[in-house]
Image (tube, rainbow, N blue to C red):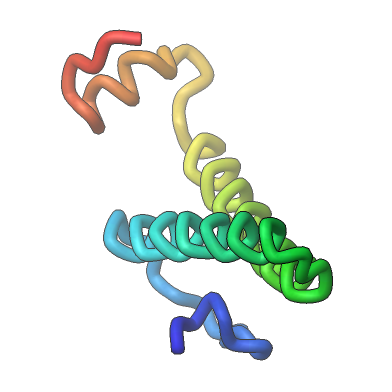
Length: 91
């Protein structure tokens, strides 16, 4: 069973790497699929459980994002930052 589905999450500091973030994004994708599946079957209790886990994961990712951008210079252009991370992706 994935860490995202366990009822008790470890409280220790985990090193934030692109791999750990990707793992959480993959888990969130799976959670969304489970929510949609349970909604179509009318299973409200299961939906609520998965939504709570998804919410916790999203808050965690938002916190990481907030901490990441705190150390950046105020004049840093966000688009330049993302282009450095993901190449010349056109919006």
